[in-house]
Amino acid sequence: MKEYIDKIAISILKQKRHKGGIRPAELCDLIIAKFRQQRKEISRNDVLSRIYFLTRNHPDEVYNPEWGILRYTGFRKEDWREEPEDKQKITEDEFYDPFAQWLLQAGKCTRAVALGGNSLSDKWGTPDVVGIWKPIPGTILKDAMELVTAEVKTEKKANNLLPAFGQACAYKLFSQYVYLVIPKQAEEDVLTRIEGLCIINGIGLVVFDNERKSNPEFEQRVAPPKQEPVLFYHDRILRELAVNEKTKELFQ
Image (cartoon, rainbow, N blue to C red; front, side, top):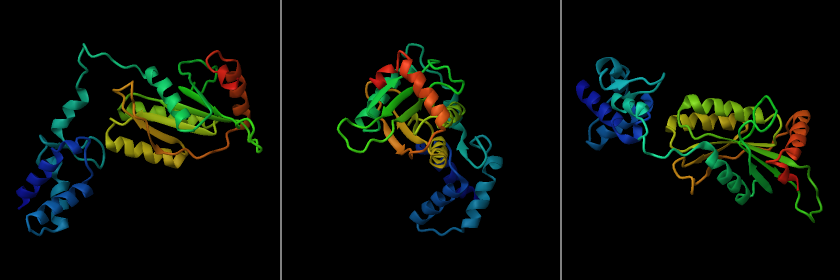
């Protein structure tokens, strides 16, 4: 029975939908469900005890990519798979304009432009996309101008996405709304963690297809709440945007 539990566990880990790894509790549930499909009963404690020793009993097939995650070793090779040399690489800045257009079409702002690079003098970085929302002419109630900023990243690995999240956090100093825009091709565990961080820290999360620049299919997973920036930094960056060649059209 012990060997049979191991066999089922490894067969589950080999499934493509679990290529990013799986947590022990979830794996346990799947194994028990498999037994029930076969009209067999199995103790949850018996299953968990076998799962606990999977990496030790089957080191050639199961490993821990990080604490609390089990993964089939065959998927480890995909982490190092190189892009074909003849494949044209899509650069990150090619998604700036499409996301600016998405912001406009989704009604998130009244004007938006691609920025990126080191266009601003601010030491905390330059947003990849900047938009503003200002009252529509003719409206009776006039709210103050609001700034929308976004950090766009085409990399899929956690060690690239976490710095991007940190950069988005920095934009909260001067923005009412902040977005982090990352590939939907990232591993589900990474997406889930980033999503949780965005919810806790008040940052919007949008995922997209980083292999299709003509139609990235932007999808909002977390809506950014409106927040009050630090007025000193908000005013300073608005003044700089108003004279920057790439962004002064926002104020026309």
